[in-house]
Amino acid sequence: MSLADDRSLALAGTRDEDEIRRARAARIERLAKWALPVVIMCLAILGWGWIVTANEIPHYILPGPDRVWESLVTDWGMLIEAAYLTGWITLAALVMAVVGGAGLAILFNQSKMLELSFYPYAVILQVTPVVSIAPLIFIYVDSKIAGMLLCAWLVAFFPVLSSTTLGLNSVDHNLRDLFRIYGANRWQRLRYLQLPSALPYFLGGLKIAGGLSLIGAVVAELVAGTGGIGSGLAFRIQEAGYRLNIARMFAALALVAAMGVFIFAALSVLSHLLLRKWHESALRKEG
Image (cartoon, rainbow, N blue to C red; front, side):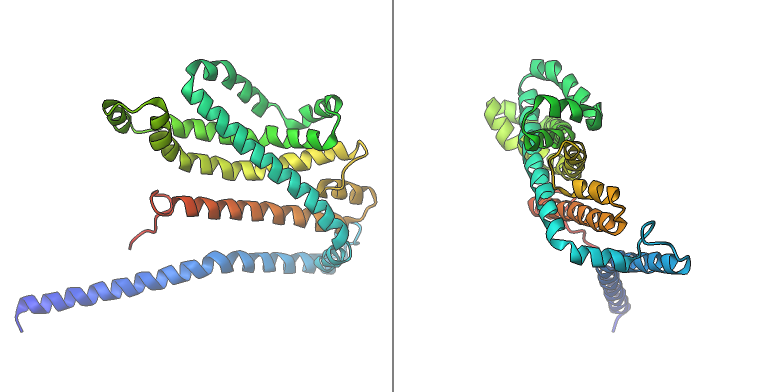
């Protein structure tokens, strides 16, 4: 066997070891991605229970995890009904934010005059706290449900608008010139160049809007609930606070958090499915 053959065998052995090491690291990373958050959550719950027991904290100040779980099971019918209303308002506000935000972004992209005229008002709506606008909305809007939807939409639509606008304006200039050279009209540029280029930006804004629509729905329920309507989760938290039922407050809060995690996970999966075959952010890394 020649010296060159020996070197080839040595290089092949090194490559095999590197591949095995990379595969092992990838398996550990995939496992840690799911296992570590669960372990941290379990440790936090155990620590919470230990602090309550060791310090003999009364349940009306800080209930232990067992009391919160008991409240979650006992009041499940009431809480799941409240979660249904909160979830419905959140999803409806998110759909309205997608339609309104993406639609306005496309209109602004097609007409600079429209963008210059109306974009500052969108910024004003975004920077004005919804807590200060909500009481006015419920004065002028008769339907409480419509008022809550409007509050949640005001919070959620701007991330979609700003992200989609940024994406539509971030098209590569060389590709834009190429479309111009080949005589593409405005609709063809929008459909085949700008919208695909803006999709990653839109999906990033959508993930932010998902969480904000839930926040907007909760804030709207807190305002509307004091007006005699509402059985959403925020209203149940408020009601439990008045009754010093702290365990039910924690149980309702846990459902709100679970709903937010579900929305984020669902939108992340949607983003991955739409981008996994062509965009750098979702392509599987080699090596």
